[in-house]
Length: 379
Image (cartoon, rainbow, N blue to C red; front, side):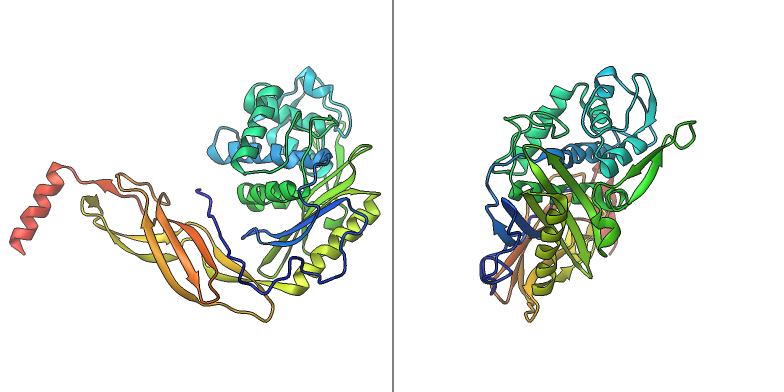
């Protein structure tokens, strides 16, 4: 699915931070808060400062895993044979053994719930053939996401002086991960405990490193991190009504302070802003005529949900929509992008959303032209 790009001009009545004068995440070296659909920045404290991300790194690794699952090159029921390299990973792990057989589904549970380094390396080796190739793809994806201050040296977040990121980039990575992982991802990251090796003589109990998913309503992810150099960090996503927020705090002194401060930041965000839906994914934009297409007329649809983030006392209406066709050749598959619509609102903000065809469109052949001409003569 092509990614919707949402652009918002700075005409909203937001201050730079949602909280006014009071500082949020006081003990964090860096903090960042965004709305998950639009990417609207709600709070920024040293958001671009280079820091160590620890196991929050795995969010980028998981983007590549879910992209492989989405394109069919990886199957959740596939059984992987664990390499000696994967089994040798230190830090957080589920103690995989060389040549052990485990499903992709269980390896994902181990990564998302228990932050297992060995499981993450096993998945990386399956997708790219080697860890080094997978890390190269992680950095390529970082370039695609326009990350400002991120470089990866491994898939797990184990400490390396040349392995770094920042709170802003972690929030953007989390936003992308939610887009590609969708509810399947969140159903795992919101699970407090589960088992792998359930049918064996040695079932292994997974307990979520993110305790907020158990104790705070609406929290359903996303990733914790800790090393001696990074200290305590977390990326949290929470949903309330139609509004989903993503908050990141980095280099907190301990997990208790980390959890309290990231939730204070998120709760302040929920208290200040709302998400106003404008159009739903697959809603019809207009009818379109293809002169040489079969069928001749097809509905054009929005390929993603469209909405805006507003102060709670605000509301906007659509002033105009301007369609630009970017694809002219046929055939087209259902849901394939054909152009973009620029949506203008009465507060002068705007969105740009991808537009696709509701059904497949083929190109007319000679016989089709003949039949069309014949019926035109008759009518």
